[in-house]
Structure formats: C-alpha cells, structure tokens
Length: 77
Image (cartoon, rainbow, N blue to C red):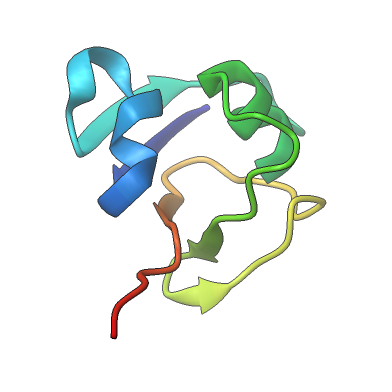
C-alpha cells in the first residue's frame, strides 16, 4: 500500500534527505508505530500523530492512500 507522510519541526530529521513530504510503500496491516520504526524514530520520541486529519496513536493501522502527519511539540517562552 502507498501512503503519504508529512513531517514538520523535529521530525524532518527522520525523513529521506530531510524532505518534509514524501510517499512510501508499506505492507498491508502496517501500523503507525512500525512506520516510525522504519523511519528510525527513537522509541522515546513522542511525536504528535495524525492520520487523515485525526489524532492517532502508534497502534493505529494504516490503509492505502492514508496521509500521516508527524510533528514534535514546539517549545517557547
């Protein structure tokens, strides 16, 4: 299955060539956590995850043509 991944802020470091938006092919039944593992995201990194515009957790199964958005919390003061 093919999915689109959009990464912002600190998550871009885990994308191919630092691109913020890319497409990838995954096996049917792949979950968000497996995608993060494949991208090399450390287990202790807790990004905000949205699938097709809705908040999701690492155990969410992905489907063909899904769009996954990932970003880390922004700090400021």
